[in-house]
Length: 316
Image (cartoon, rainbow, N blue to C red; front, side, top):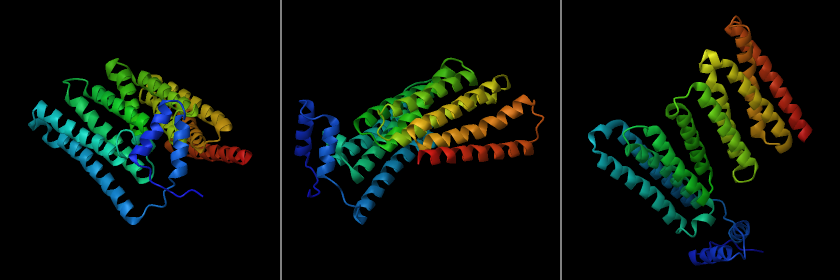
């Protein structure tokens, strides 16, 4: 019977050496660490330390946001860059110190993993502010791109839920701004770009490259649905909105039959509930009253829910 132990930095470094020399692969490394270290439920002091870590990171990001909104114009560019650089370094270095060093960060677990993942995700936020502060125009694009680089890099180093959410958010901001402001695009081009991005996220997740499978699917489905709905803001492209949303609904249900993911089932139900009232409104040139649309939406929601229940029953 294995006794739970906390591996030392030297032991973790030795494991990494075995991976580098090809004796073990990364999956086997994680399996060894998991077998030797099965942490018990967090004690009250551990929970308190975890909360303090979250609060500290949140205060740093909140302070950066408050600085941007209140005192930004009073600071020189050098001061802005210096403060945001310091905040970013505190978050990144703090995360590495809590992890036990760069070599240990990939295999930490439990409370430390959650804290470090959160600090890294917050660092991508301060990096986004920093990127925007270095330019005179296109602040959103440059800042989001900088945030995406840090979010993706730290997620590859330590795959966690906060890191995945940060990467998904900044990827959507970068693609949306590139298709819109940078390319002088319309709501249709931005919507199509986000729809493709969301679909790509789903594909990458299903390929097994994203450890947090359900969250990865949720990120992809959310981005795709937002992209599908954007063209509805322009009367000339409204048909694209419910067309793309219909594709999202069919794709979600079809993929659910193969993957059996509740996230995909919910995405299909939401997309179906959105698309039918929109199509009815467009096909009738808006003659259907608001109450009628609510009624249609209710019927569609019940029908979609019924379909979802049948699919779940068939799965079980």
